[in-house]
Image: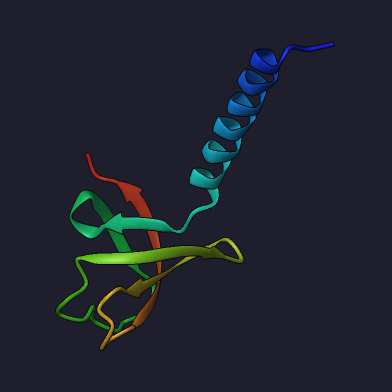
Length: 82
């Protein structure tokens, strides 16, 4: 039988594993300045598109402007700058 201390250690370890998993599935926040972004539509980016929330939908990345008054969306492919 495990001691209380051992159980606390096991629980803390599991909580850390869950936290790591949550980080992986959290919304992707991308700073456009750090990425090469290719918009798949001819639509120009809005003037505030420097920070966007991205989500993968059917193998494509949907970027949404985080300006609460805007919310424009684009389909994009994103690759690291470099």
